[in-house]
Image (cartoon, rainbow, N blue to C red; front, side, top):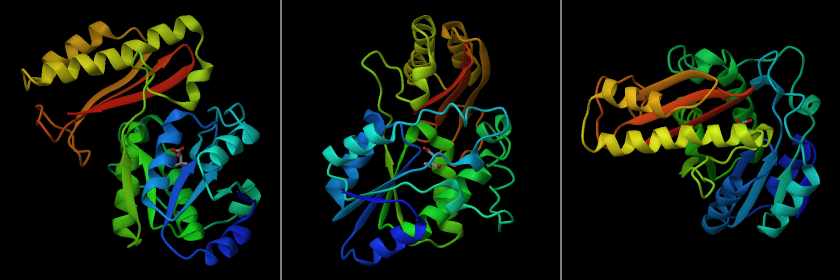
Length: 272
Ligand code: PAF
């Protein structure tokens, strides 16, 4: 497995590849969720490239950039075992200059929900994904549905900037008890982890209720009763294009939650 430490190394390596390239962008601390993206990429492409880059521009001041888990050697081993051809792991100074051409997330859908709670977050995500796509020039890129708004905005960027890349949406991986896998779960104490479970439980209950009623207020009320979090940032009902909806539309609804348990911010969702 090749380790590519700079954009120029990655660009040179990419030129040697003849065939389809599956790309899995990550910030490392790889877990089963990432592994499922890598495995799908492995099945569907001649070559698989994973990037590991804790992108500073998508963290807001005061967020967990410095303490974000970094486990490069363990991540390399996971990638090696999964048959990854190359890992791209650049240093921030090789990815950014001081005064850059910037990319802005769309004014509405980039600044609601996650974008409202983390203003500027999606500008940073789209900027780095744009750079990564230009460096790796993948045939297909793999993203998890847990970051549903990110996935939606990346698809929009691909359309708006005419990238010739297929975006592959992958199901959220969960622990046996339902907790959505996230690199941030390691921040949770045992007691917090138990309470964090109430997020997936509330979503599961919402999905069940949605088969009986379209009434969002009724569903939301039951979700709030189940949730045992310290700070509920939002429960939202949107369609697949991230327009707010007033009632459940079967086959075209996403229910999303963002909440803090202790000091850990978690997000999860369910597609109805
Ligand atoms: O989802 C993530 O891990 C990150 O937002 C991404 C897409 C790798 C960009 O830094």
